[in-house]
Image 1 (cartoon, rainbow, N blue to C red):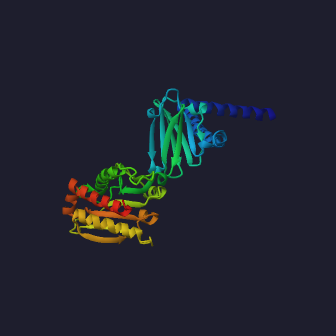
Image 2: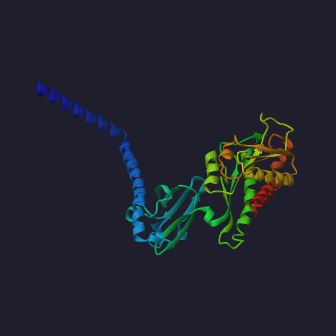
Image 3: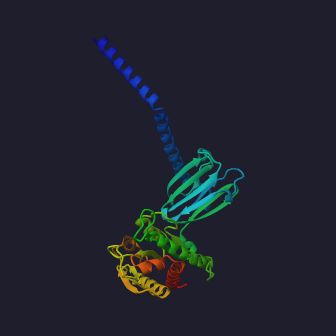
Length: 356
């Protein structure tokens, strides 16, 4: 009896093993995929571990590196050979180094302080490797190369600039906003924002005009192309940069979305801002837009029910430039002249409100 049970168990085990082999043979990529996933996760975790574990070692080796990160560069590599991209909306930074393999940071660990780094990823392709930093807030990376190393420091915007502004082009991507007669709000918002950027770029280029060692102005944009940005990402950019002003650009519409004679400009503000700074900023925007556009005033409007206004920690204004549901105004707002006039009104509002 005991022999028969053992024999049956042996047969069951053999059949199970055979079935497993058949499954692997039928799905040849299954095993390799599982391994590759495991290896990928191991590699990412290893790079992050190297970063975290090197923190104390770095401080012990050289106290001057406190708050810095050091990468070992491939032989002959220059700083200009790399691609550095900051993503303030996502609080991210990427550095692409040509020619390195997935094992590069096993041989040359990343050394430095991880105090500002929440996550660190490393990916490779045929051209090289890219390090992705996820940071705890928005920083301006200061990057220098010396003696075969790349040194990265994360500096808060207010350490470098006297004034910080965030400009938000409303909607984007699948979120088209209001629309009428084939015209979409998201595109008009972006067109005006880009023209405003041209004007602000010139002011930024003036640099340090008061000689205090800081640049006068830094402007961040939530989007400069047709992409959808979450509301929290928009307002977080303003809050994480400790912005002095937050301006959101929109186009208005009737509640029904139907054609209407209703036209004009209105600006929303944060009533809960008991300092009155938000209302003052919105009033300046309204005054300048009415002057530059020769439009009818729809007044100042409480906007605390709007998420980006409610969560903003600085003076905020949401400018509804004109009505897309008004045929005459819709035709005007598609012209270069109208968009430049709107941009000028907003530019004057920002500069005046900052005291520049």
